[in-house]
Length: 372
Image 1: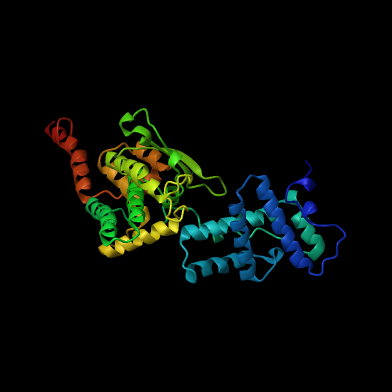
Image 2 (image 1 turned 60 degrees about the horizontal axis):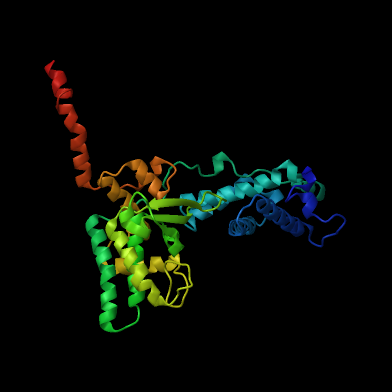
């Protein structure tokens, strides 16, 4: 395939011989169509492409300039507004800058012909505007809220007990909501018991559970297949298998699946967490229920739904589970990411310190060295 025929090239998107009433706007729309075609040809998802286009249109509106007039200073001003006015996180700003960089790299790639087309039409052309010196570097493995933390074991027990109590309260009051309360109590146990993210949990299906030959005592709930793991930029969601390790959590899931979920009357729906109207629960609804419980208990706002995942990593680490196993369970490519998720307790740190120090004061340690 020749360069002129590349998906997204100016030669395919611009109609020769047609006089445009607004040539600048027409060129911008052709560029965006071309970028969409190029990404589609690469197999990117429609929602990813749409989100990127929305970001570029926002940058167009911010600068009030056409892409062939953009400069690095425009990126500086835009990035400053994202920080000072919209108060976005560094990771979000870096993602936005990355998407803008992809668009400008597409425009300035000579294979697609947009530089030549702009030069011929307007006497100027687009240039790279995102550089190392005016964009955020990925310096940290974790850039979330520094106040976010794991639950202590006592806090976790209080939270899960409170969630269970809501079922009994609804039943005693004779009001609707007991099924939803039971569903949500089980959902929170699953987030913690398998170390899941919120979206991963919301998109679970009944058929995602399976047997694990290494743990036959868990029957059909020995392994959880996560299909919507966190995706790398522009790629499909990553899948992983999470082995069941907490017997009490398996019992809670089995009870919900066998005795509670059928009462929703949604036998044909594949979702694990269905609503009373027959739909699938949304991540925002998980947030809302979690926030209501946290507020009712007077717990710190530093605790979020994601804190349950942090707690999974932390508590397994405190219990002496191999770090590599934990890393694979939660789907981290690097051990450093798992380490950031770990918030071990003071008691654990003290015990670990004593274990580390004890060899130094025995046999071949410091004391023995001094006696020589």
